Length: 145
Image (cartoon, rainbow, N blue to C red; front, side):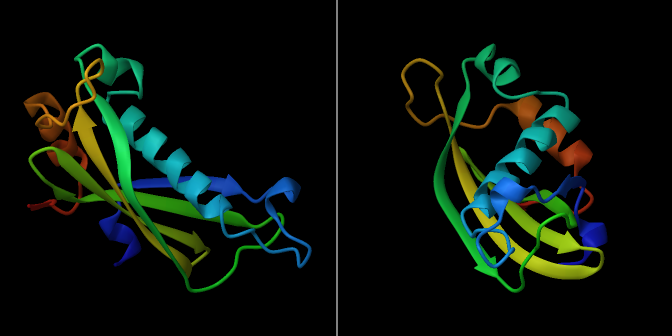
């Protein structure tokens, strides 16, 4: 995936608490970086999580998360965590994620969320207002399930 295909790019600096003894980012922290990017994605499309979704009786739950390690970020690196919606299903949203240091692609990932009722937590269709906001924001049109 090319950097220009990502509609959200969040710059972060690797902190001391995120690295292991070798001075590289401990693998589990990449999921936290993904979470930051997805949180900023919601804000960027005008529906900051969780309040904007909860007010519409919606909530999102992770059902799958994958991380592919191609390289390593190190202490004090500036990294870009990139997010985009790759697929928009009936009740699910697939986020495609990458981490870059300058132009070097370090990490690829995927997180799949299912939309559910805020109270009953039963899967329900992604609402039209959210679909419209996602389509308006994306550079590359998300695939349909």
